[in-house]
Length: 218
Ligand SMILES: C[S@@+](CC[C@H](N)C(=O)[O-])C[C@H]1O[C@@H](n2cnc3c(N)ncnc32)[C@H](O)[C@@H]1O
Image (cartoon, rainbow, N blue to C red; front, side, top):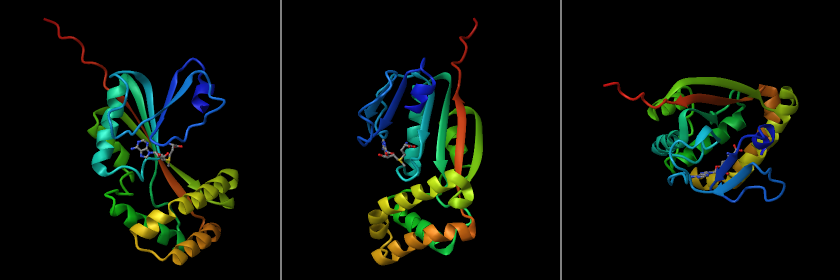
């Protein structure tokens, strides 16, 4: 919706498998489609100038990553841009409680075939190359978590806390963790980010679909 407002001449399509979309005040140039991206995307080849995917790190196995990004490549126009934005699934300067939660999460996801470290440098670059994308560039952004990161840091900390609460059942079950231990770790992790000056790492990887090969001259 932000993109649709910022670029009124563009037509924006958003996809998620859950019905998480806003239902009111949707800009006219914006539509949402409920769709599982493990199935072929409901668009012809060469449809979009720009294809953007963010924060699927918990949802895709290594084989699915390549399958999905190849599908993003298919629906991009020749010369069109693809951008992937992902967390690194570990963070930096973790205190002992945050480190414990990341370890449990990694363990739980492993039982589902998901490798939470897949995005770590050069993870996204490798996946884009496998999908035949060219002109690849990756930025690594470190965002401080908590008050020491100002307003954005505070928001990131709130986001981290609600993320850890939301995934609690999956982690407790998958890593066989005691619920009280998990809840205590989440509580303590909120406090320790200031002491350890913790941060999150995000990768922003962009690249282009190859231009069509020029017609051969007889
Ligand atoms: C961490 S959220 C990120 C949401 C949004 N992309 C963003 O960056 O704000 C992950 C989202 O991926 C969606 N998701 C997970 N697996 C999916 C799949 N196979 N197809 C479509 N959406 C999926 C989930 O429903 C969830 O809304």
